[in-house]
Image (cartoon, rainbow, N blue to C red):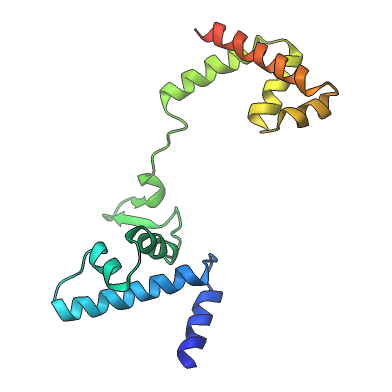
Length: 162
């Protein structure tokens, strides 16, 4: 009963909600790994642990990832007495690379050249993520007209960018 209460506390007082079954797989994995390490005097592989508990290796990996505590982007990774190196510094920014910046400028110019109605449709569809039906209701035209205008806009943009 005490072990059950401890598990319930750990399950319910975590910053990220993880399903009970996934959490149970993670605890079985930890227990099996510790037992196998003591028995064989070496760290078992993922496949050995998965075989021991009778679960697919992918499920074991997913379960172990699920119980990891989240790490702040501002968590220091390394300090040599000067400026600290943070987790954020280790993450690649694929959105703001130079080639994307140039593509963004070209795309913006292609959109700017569209007639206002087509520009509005492209904005609603691709920047706000609305469906053709939602756009049609918002600008008071049929879905077929939205489809036709969207197709024309994309074709115009494609020709400009080519």
